[in-house]
Image 1 (tube, protein in one colour):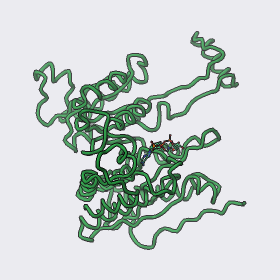
Image 2: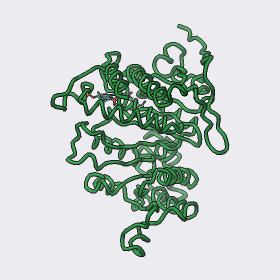
Image 3: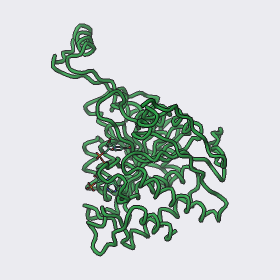
Length: 415
Ligand code: NAP
């Protein structure tokens, strides 16, 4: 079947968010692109958009509203338009600046690496941001899940996401092996695949800068730089050094290093200062389990952050309740951390909490904090009433199991 050429029609109502020098100018009726996504994506995004719209309308007394703009991507777009990420969809997100998305299938093998990676790299959404906090009542494997309240800033454009790899036996791997041996006397086994991970000063600094700014603006206590610099000195070790440098050079009044706190302040940070510290990645995993409350904002290179954010999410009840944001200098796309769970597609069954909380992050990013807070509180209230979807119901005593859409109805009632 020949693919139709995709032309999108933007909504006739609403206004664009404008990127201004001092930040975003958000109208009272912003047009926000939404990608429903694959598998369970349509179920969770439809539930979430109703809850988000209701929160905005109620908290603003009807003064504000979101004008959603459906844009296709994923399997449906591939089937109808021959492209997983149509150019028109990409252009719409670029034009309207802030978007919400559901999960998208990443085809295994083939030419397209990942739609999510393409979006992040194309719009330079370099900070993958994941707040991880516990909602009372959500079953957790921890004795004290309430101690977890962190925000992970994970670099999203380089390190392993730069995707520089050559297969075992390929011509490129052969050339590189020969070059490394003749120029640097470095021997790599003939049967090895080879990967390179660049970590640059500019990209590290802009990520850590964002993490520090967030910490200052949100009255957080510390920023921990998570690295593996004991082994990889010029990539991971440099990430740590550049991170401290940003704090020292750009935020000298607002930050202090942990060393200085211990040396000059007897271990108690002066009021109002964000403490800069660094933790080796493997240690970070045990620290998050054993001294959870000592951590607040984390800044990490790509791969460390990938492992850490899923592991941290598990501590507060799993992927069904964990949201994320992909944020650049101005553009931002918010999404749940979970995937498309294809076995539940179209069953109106799964938990839309992560997608709704991605909406909370989006509202906060728009500067509509009171709407975000109201929505988060309504989710908390609903779960406290034990009105939950199957995933939580199977672990909770006395729960009332509801469908995905009915959970959103309950959240809206609780607004
Ligand atoms: P997954 O889709 O996250 O699902 C794994 C399991 O997690 C599900 O079977 C289900 O567990 C549970 N789960 C996920 N979302 C849930 C929700 N909203 N409510 C309740 N339970 C939920 O992981 P996957 O099977 O590894 O990945 C499937 C596809 O998604 C792949 O193509 C992958 O590439 C893609 N993916 C996309 C994104 C993204 O778009 N950002 C992220 C991750 C993965 P039970 O079976 O125990 O009920």
